Image 1 (cartoon, rainbow, N blue to C red):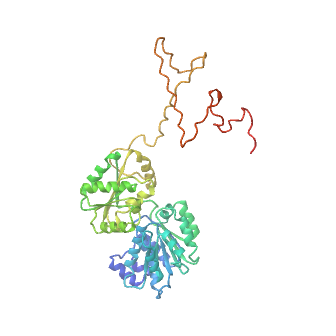
Image 2: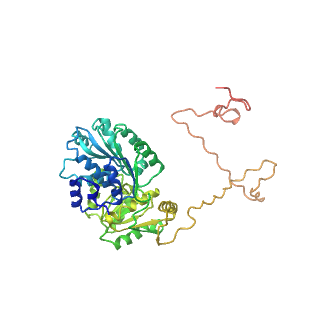
Image 3: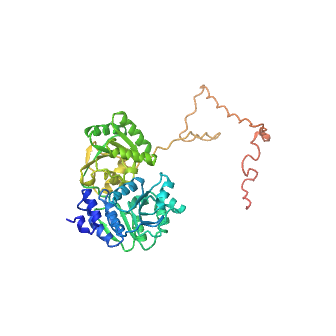
Length: 462
């Protein structure tokens, strides 16, 4: 089996890997690192949690360590783009682990933080810039960063980046990077859009694929409960009580729903927190720090945490709400079984979520084992057409036959139904004169557009 020492990495990096307890690369690392070291563009396809960060990070750091001189002011040597703040921070933390004691600088740029402080750090130049696309464009437009000497471009979680609408941002950023560069792109799935991006930005790339796109980590024990929506909270409580000393991630679909569920679990005595897009950057970082430290045992999250969250102690993932993007199911459950550990993923399925379940199982190419309840019937079938409402019968013309469906006339001697009172005319406002009725009791003249045109007359040309 391949070892890191066989890949030609710098002795400094090998020592840092040994300190971190890593001696053998994962499949994506073993297959990618030699090509990156050789200067080839690369398209990497691998499921979440397989070690993609080191697959591109180690060879980049190896090359930068060999340079031996600092970058110029505001200049960047390697740019890594990721779609979310959490993923950017995770990449930055991982790379910083391997640059301790060296002159290599890793700088992080994300939205929600002080742009002026970020500009101050960039003013001195940086070796590796890890950024979200939106904030990087802000800094480029302000003149706070210069990409003219950027020799490496990495697009991590490229499929998620496109899902979030960052393709236009990518096009803007690419204009400022030299064409003569090495480009690496990593993705968990391979939709048509990713193929197009690969053809646009990569030159004769090597394609590395270590698992079929969308295939979850095999060590995850999956299961599904069919349960009404109103009973999900109690079922979740029973699962959490079975494993009180093990950390769990609970995924909901909405921000409001995540907050509501977290408050309910807290009222039941769980050490719980919530993370979603409405929380500030500082709040999200503080919550993740508390989760990593074990101060929070249950983290309720939206899909903002489905990627880029690397916490090896997570043993359980609960899909409280099924995602409406089937690929996100794979990313959600990939938050457990990290670093070779075991993990479980339990999904709750309400009647209205059967279509979402069918889409997820289509991506997985196999059904999820049923561990509770039975599949809801007749879900996904076209709804029955509503019966046409029958309006009130039209009044019969004087002397004419009664319309079909009309009620028979009231018998003689019966009291006639009371006539409805005519609606009162609106009172004039602001001292306006009441409209005068037309002679003969008709409507005021000119009340209808074109009312003066005789019937059958054609409209005059405009």
